[in-house]
Length: 346
Image 1 (spheres, helix red, strand yellow):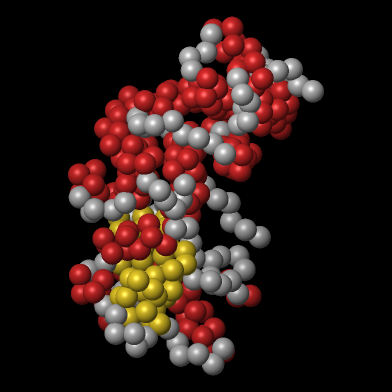
Image 2: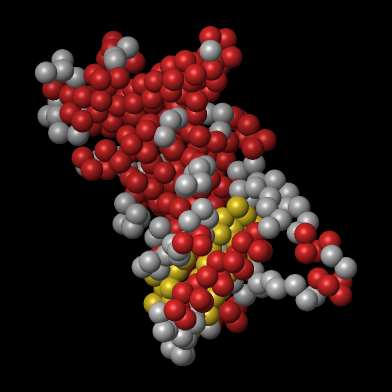
């Protein structure tokens, strides 16, 4: 059984799939003396993660392998992400750390040093159970010294001041965006972040800039009140160059943006479900949401490749069936002109 991935989890895992971004974040959060004790040139995603029979229902969000600066010890940086309050996160990380060290012993290796880190945002933190114990007993309980990056306790200026790669800063700002920001507040924030969008778009990666922008768009579509059209136009005016979508990226974009379901599709499904039957409504809402999302992305791709579109072209795309939209999305990547891109399906 695999826990359901939320939009927050997907953005976090996209960001931390790249060791260079994760390393930059960790160095900005760790106390200076701890950061100085790590050889950051060896920092990499752990090859085999932390999968084991005792942790088949739960596993840490990210594990990185590195060495101490003097080269004397292996270090595993254990990173957990929480978008909600969990008073048991300390015990969770302790369980992971014990598992890692036991596995090293079983393999005949020297147990690695474990550096646990927590990235959290969302609702306020509840008091951990251990903190409610009598002081004499609480002091005797096993616990880790977790390095916490609480995005609720910082602000936009402080996040920008960390000197992270633009994509990392942009992702953290998105995670920290308060739910009560509303449509206007979200649009204002995205326009304020124009310099970050443009810098992330110009970054050579990894990840490729088009994948990075796709991940940000998916997260914002899933977590804000912006329509797909508003989101598409906002992103378009905040980047400095056209994004070329090669075939593999186009495939990934469609899968990521629509296979999991855009917010519009889920909301349509909920509305239909209340009035005409929950199961049927959700199914219909997902189909309509995917079609709307595919049409929005196709219109953006057509505009970037062939320039402003005539109203009748826009209307034709919006009225197309899901099968026709899918065919056009594939064809637009290689079509020589607009007529070829929107030719009737073979």
